[in-house]
Structure formats: structure tokens, C-alpha cells
Image (cartoon, rainbow, N blue to C red; front, side, top):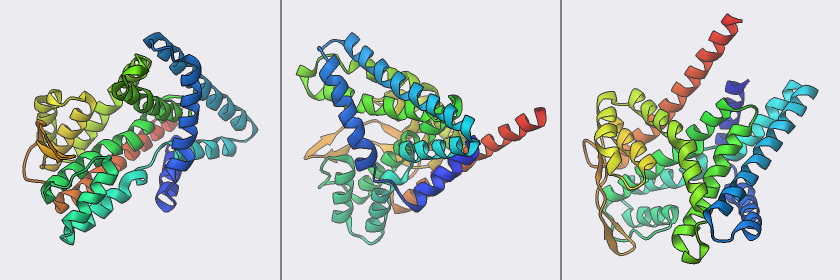
Length: 310
């Protein structure tokens, strides 16, 4: 039923993408603000308490509700899984930016591609070349595919019912909301320290499995080489692993200096091969879909092995 739930949720998300800002981000922001108002006293331990309250309440509540539904009817349990997966995962949440940027580059509309990239990343890229725009779009897509699909799927498989999907999605949101606010607002205190560390722990194994899958379905030798040789140079270790392995698997150079909001941002080189362009953006879509197929095949084989063993 795990494989079936994932397939149905992904198909549903492809057919009718979820307005994530309205149905996911807005409720989570209200929930996070509610906890912040009651627990934030500027110390890390208060952030830890708030994080555990949020995670335990959401995950335990979802698991309990799932088992009640399953006891009434297994079909209801599966439908609940599909609903939660539909709310917590899906590459289509950001893929419209990627598709529109690729189309703009193919049409030679570089200013339009720059504008779309700026809307996606929340920064200005007025001086970026077409190759730089493609490079940044590929980077965003590789990280987003993990955060929105493969990371959620991993924890959904590991924990009962939909609690794993909720755990990953909520932990990621609290890291982005409280961890980012800690970095931007000195008055926020150390409240976001624990959520950031907690998400890094939860994402440690999923990131490496996604990177391994990128290498398997792409250029394995270059993917593994770039992972081992380059990932540690990136500021965010998890993103560095994904970009290095993805760039090596695709045979494209990522990272490197970029023009951002009027400044030149120095970054190490990730991946190996040619300069990024619209063709490599299409190859990125293929890499992500092949990775997804690999995950589904492994789940199917595990299900068959369990069925035969019983």
C-alpha cells in the first residue's frame, strides 16, 4: 500500500498541482507563529521544546488517526495517506518556474528567464548570462526534487501511516521559518538553533540516498567522484552533496561565481563537464524522473520480497 499511495499522490499532484502557499505554507506559518509566541524566549532550549511539541503533536496525531481509519476500513487509511502525501510532497510546486525558464532560454528571451529565476529564488539576477540562469535553475531543481519528493518519500516509507511525511515536511518548514529568522533577525535569539540541527539530522541519510540514486541513473563514476571531491566545499553540506553528485551525473558544471542582486557571489565549482544550457535543463528533468522510477522499482521489489517471504 506504500507504493500505491506514493504513485496515486504523485499522479494526483501532476494532474492538479496543489496551491501550496494557500493550503500548506499559510497554515504552517500560523502554527509556527503560535508556538513562537508562547515559547520563544531567545534561548535554544525553548526552540527545542517548541520543536518537539510541534513534531510530536502532528506526527502522533496523524498516526493515531491513520490507525483508526485503517481499523474502520483499509481503504480509508490509504486515502488518508494519499491526502497527506499530496499536501507534503510534489515537484510541481516549483517546476513551473523551471519549465518557464527553460522555454524562455530556448526562445532566446534571456531577460524573461532572469525575471523568472529572480521570482523563484527571491533575488535579482539582472546581470546573469543565459548559462548562469540555466545553471542556477538546475541547482534549484536538484535540491527541490529531494526536498519535495525523495526526502518526504523516505520518511513516509520508514514511519507508520503518513507520520513520516509529516515529520519531514514540518521539520523542514520549522528549519526554514525559525532557522532563517534566526539568521536574519539578531533579536530572534537562538530559538531556531535546534530546529536547524534537528532537520540536518533527519535529512542526513535521505540526502545521501538521493545523491546515490542520482549517480546510479546518471554518470555513476563522475557522480561519485564529484560527491567525494567537491561536496565539502559547499556552505550547506546537504545541498553540496546533491549539487556535486547531480552535476557529475549530468556531466554539467554547477556552482561557480554568480551575479546576484547587484553583487558577484563567489561559489566553488560543483559537477564536471560542459557549461549549463537549456539542453542540460531537459537532461535534469530526465535525471529526476529516472531517480523516481528507480525508487518505485526498489519499493516494488521490496514489496514482492515481503509477499514471497510470507
